[in-house]
Length: 241
Ligand SMILES: [Zn+2]
Image (cartoon, rainbow, N blue to C red; front, side):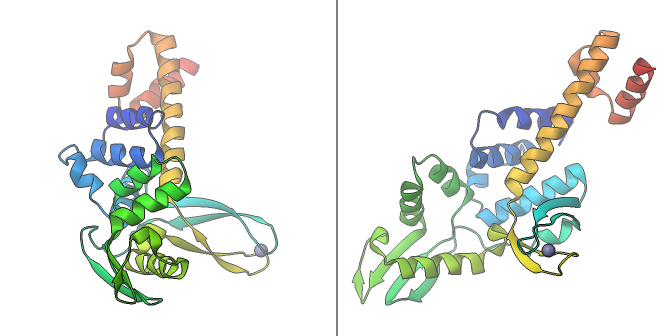
């Protein structure tokens, strides 16, 4: 992904929802892929691509800041992001069956497009109804067909658990260890906001460099962006000196 495409992705992040931005970013990274093909990825497949893209852009070293829930110490944990890409997730189109709480369900995993549609719903309940309507392909209770929205809470909880087991990449957990009190605990890790913060910081640093070089030499933005980071840095050190 070149500098110009990544800057476009940064701009897109200011007008799109996080779910929309994830798809726009992947589309800029893979211009050969249609929007429909990217939207059809399961959430785990999408997230694996986001992590791979992130590692290609910024390297695989990752720093996570979390507070220990036991001793309240703030920890900055350095880790390698490469192992965060798990074995391939199932496709969102694949059908799965679940028997729980007297209910029989035929379902598929949520796709990136499903999350995008759900993010446009006004509230959490509406988003959940939309996801159920899309992902539950057949539902019956004690042998009688029912609407997905009529499923009992316990069956919905079993469905959510099963989806998490089938697609652990979509529900990534990091195991953290506190060196102060030796507490071990799992934290949910969402690559999307993390990657947004990294790209936002990168873009602001880069635009600051463009500003400094344009002010010092009168060069055009496109010419400054076309330089390698090494060359930009070399000119910056001269203009400051
Ligand atoms: Zn602790």
